[in-house]
Length: 420
Image (cartoon, rainbow, N blue to C red):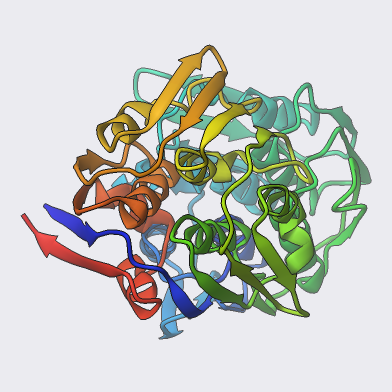
């Protein structure tokens, strides 16, 4: 069992380069299946979720190999069966994109229900609603944990999402690329990785317009072809390191970012009296003043990301006075709060609202990651805490953060991975 040992209260200084976006990568890799040819995906993050998809694509019969640590060549021409029931599929949430990709190419899919982090009810009903609207018959075997979908043909239609869902938006886009006629997705998600996936599909010959707005139109084409594509920088990893610079009272230049993707976080850090300097593809964080109190509400993009709520909570736990975070996306994302309390945080949770009474300092303790972003919060809290912190549950952290101990170590953190 691997764990992280952190000796806190060291200011982070220097530069950190952000990896490719996890949430874009896990959609673009399945999207490459639709073409049935050769694609080269660059700027991939070197993380467990990508590794799981890499193994899955190989098991499907494709040629999927790393050209280097961050570049994957995918030749999906030899995939003959739209069936993915492997252990790797059950490990990650984004495996549901295989359903949309299989439906587009084979008009049939048999895929294990997705896994990933458990922080509340995360249904895929909007995905299934979209597939059915396109003409597929869909059923779910809950006992076996398998989704079945089949269609004689897919026909474009108008689909209104009852809730803004990134996963459903992307999955319907995938399925609709080869459908007859035009598909319209209304109340679509606008996140950067939705746009990135649409851009990749368009590079392969799809005809998608409106990605990044709440109405996306997909004009069905007869076939797609392979493409070379570089994934955008990871908005959430970038935000995590920005908050890390702040919580350690440091001076950190976060490189390889798209600053506009981080506007909602930058605004809150500025409100806290933290210096945020934006450049073309980097952001510098300087925290040399007492923190001011803020209120944060998570929302769909371009609002404050739910994935940055746990790291932000860690930061506000050392911002003296009363801070409030309202979680509007996932109903049970505060389950990590008890772990922060072990470090001395003063937090009261009522329903979807956390009231954080900032303390002067945190103190090291043994904590665990309850999910991916909660794991990031434990690392940040440990960096700010007095003494030694041990973080368990690295299987979650490694799903979405590339070599955290190396990146934080290069900024001056005393952090190391060890086997228990």
